[in-house]
Length: 410
Image 1 (cartoon, one colour):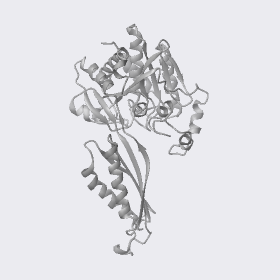
Image 2 (image 1 turned 90 degrees about the vertical axis):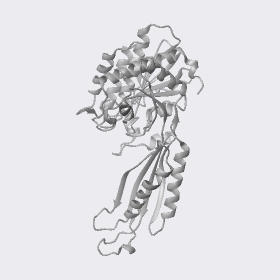
Image 3 (image 1 turned 90 degrees about the horizontal axis):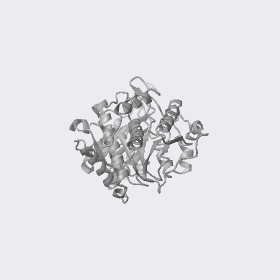
Image 4 (image 1 turned 60 degrees about the horizontal axis):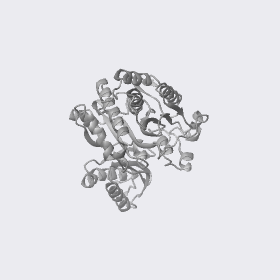
């Protein structure tokens, strides 16, 4: 089995976590000063490892193996959500760095090298998975021009921070044979099962819809219930319908959420004249997503005008992404080689791999998250699980380098 330096992995992760540190977590949102600092830190680490490291004008960091004409692409992202955790994304980048170091240290002759990538703005401060999408040529200029953060800062303005860096890195279908990404699970399944490694079978598709109701503001004390055009009650009833109907049609891994709801004018003594909610649902099956979206459309149509106007629009649609089974098998075999039977689970969160998978064979590996926590300063994974996961990941990369024909066809 290929050798890694576990102490170095932990040290690198801890050092990276000092950049943008916030209490026990990290606040390193995309294109902030600390995000750029972390990316420059990584460039230097890549160069010290013997790779050609550079930051490009999209914020992507690429470490290229200078001795190889072909390479396994490995990595993740180092940006975080506001006041987030220290491992989300960063773990996969440091695993990738250590896998590259291990490949050099092994001294084995191979025509296939290891390239390391850290994608920009995976978390969507401006545009979700911006870095992987531009790297893969899967984004329109108009989308970049329209993108902005919650505070109104435009992505094009934020990109000024890297305007003088290298030209955009691009995926090379001739060079990059496959993509491997490691990540914390961000959920409780591995920990609950007492397991240390999961092979990701696929990444969920995501549908996000905005539903609005338009009624009439009236005095809440003097207007009889039967005479109200209550936009607030209308969407509360819609939310209750979702809770009742979605379980009847959902798949075993379907999840849904209403995480945003607002009433206008928002006063306790005024019947709401307008209301809005955002409904999101996720599944690895496009057919299930289509079914649920169709049910919502039919329900909104049935509610419209009785007595409140109701309308829905789809504001985000991300297709599910299947992972390459033969690459997943390499991760599973790498785990077995050190006595661990890997779980096989779908990812309920989006990751850069879902866009890279559209271009080259791709696979993902999870390690446990303590308490299933993520996107919060409480996010953590034990040092022993971090080091164990890196051993498995580096071994999987080594196996992919030795046997690229095993995953040549999806």
